[in-house]
Amino acid sequence: MGPLAYTRIYSGEMKKNTNLLNSSTGTHEKIGHIYRVRANQYVSVNHIHTGDIVAISGLRDTKAGQTLI
Image (cartoon, rainbow, N blue to C red):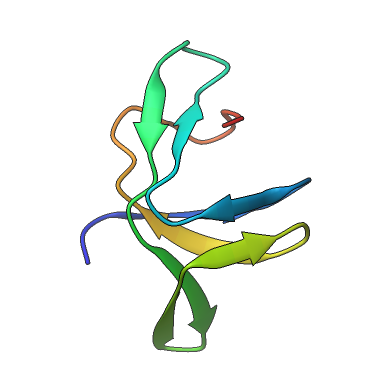
């Protein structure tokens, strides 16, 4: 599974394997897998919407507090 970043979607939607821009650094990040977390279970999903809180994999240069658009 690799390192995971927990995030909330504030607007719009996101799909697995999407390229997003890190607005703080100007670099692009590719979202690997998206997981809904239920206690100790990680359920892989392909698509998420506004308000969802999920774990994502594949981020390399994004740090806490940075915004992906």
